[in-house]
Image 1: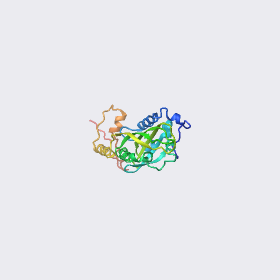
Image 2: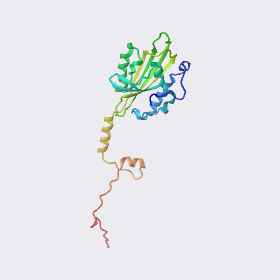
Image 3: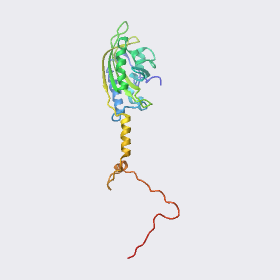
Image 4: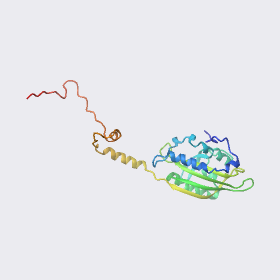
Length: 237
């Protein structure tokens, strides 16, 4: 799949772009939150484009390739229209003017290493054929196939006329939020401690769910053929 696509709306005009387009950020953020399990992050293979059909053209997938550097692996048509070309393989900083690239690179590492979420307020450069254009972008970390946080689900929403491509942005604000997670190592330690615990006696009327967690039946070894282990003895007084 080259792009996430344009969803089910069949394209959008510059006028439509200015009507409540920031709502797509909430759609993608809500979908990502819905995939989280307790304090764990969503996995890449859990992302289904059908879950964010209303925001597909604004959505993209980033891959971390070095500290502070991430490139587009998938991108919706909104990014294609902004840059006037296919952005797959390009770094995220291609959207940012040169003065702001080091700033976003520094903050970008917190998304993967934190891990954490990041929301960015953007304002496009102006010029001939390039009218006022604002944008907001959100980056949400994902666990990749290797079990490490090296991917991010992103969404960019614009407000204003697209104008002549490419459009690059100055950063007007960044908000980063760290995500509290239970580390894999800590979970493994707890599992090993549980394995070393003595079995807990179960009350006769305990529920089946509780019994499954605290009691494991042990079957005696089968006796060899021939002489039986037990004999029935009658005692008469």
